[in-house]
Image 1 (cartoon, helix red, strand yellow):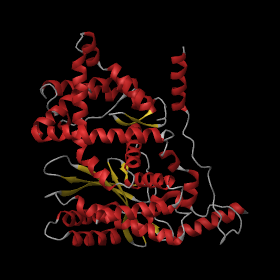
Image 2 (cartoon, rainbow over the protein chains, first blue to last red):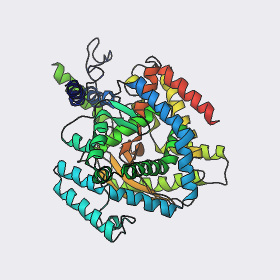
Image 3 (tube, each protein chain N blue to C red):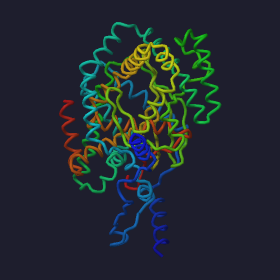
Image 4 (cartoon, one colour):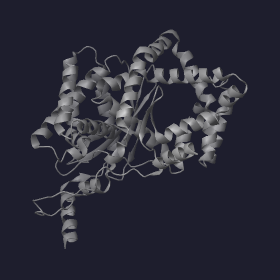
Length: 272
Length: 199
């Protein structure tokens, strides 16, 4: 019973719309309207109406997250990066690519499940096509033939499915080892893990370690792919934790939105 | 009355802005030119790091709008900053950008820059889609937000895989400022420290 209410409470956190950290503020422009508070031009008015910046930093658990982030970073430094480097050094790129594609192919059934849960029947059909073609012509998923045929990989996971059902991301959350996530996306990972037919097979057939090995290889594959990018970000960022957070949140938002959004970007103003 | 004055004033200011809608074709040509130039500079091994940085700085100053980008990146803290803090920030922002890019791509060779197309945006700018084709490793898709102001075209944002660098940096700098007690001085100090680290 207690578990149920805890879960319900946590779920509720996700559904609460993110509140702007600041009230819509207005400016005083003494030149035009002494003492009055009036937004003076199109750009500033827009900023007042869309305090989009506040939504970017939904991180009430920041100190906890920074701790886990630091832990992950240390683990990477001691262990995972060394393994990735060895992997990269020993195994030729061609083989690593095959491993990557094969893993991705194995995850297509989950993508199909999520396509259907989102009501995207056409996408489900495309993904099924990808899975079948890559598994056969692409030799057990080793070769991504489908992309060349015009059916590129379109990632879907349960976190994005929840997003399509209207669930907001909830607070930013850094997971041990797994890295940046959000409250919603963490539930998403759990959901995907449960949905995955391979995990079902492995556990029911008492071969749980197959599933764990696959997870391990997935993590290795992902980390190896991103070694340079991460090292680059880490070196150049002023606040590495905050850059990764921003990157993660924006990436998820981008994946979750089907129609292209007009980005909030720098633009000219009359001061130039 | 207030509403009328507001409308009149904003219309007046908007017209003064002289911001023209960008022609997508021109934007593409503009980017094609810059992209190739930048790659040539950043992968040029025969010049010194200093020289490479100088050349890149020139591109930054003439083809990007550092002031608008800096102002955006500082976000809600721009208003709070003193004139001196603003200038210092823009200078540090520009220099750390130059420093971080000047050495990043030294090891790259024979990368090609390809324009893939363009997309006019509702705000009058154009997003130019491009990618860097790498002989080994994955291609990198990059989008560029271009605006025309006073008959001059400039880059206002760089978008990697759908993620705006302007927004990412804004979030990052905001975090630094918040941790520094909400003072713009915090980001200036952090940038200065970063700059020292590059040298």
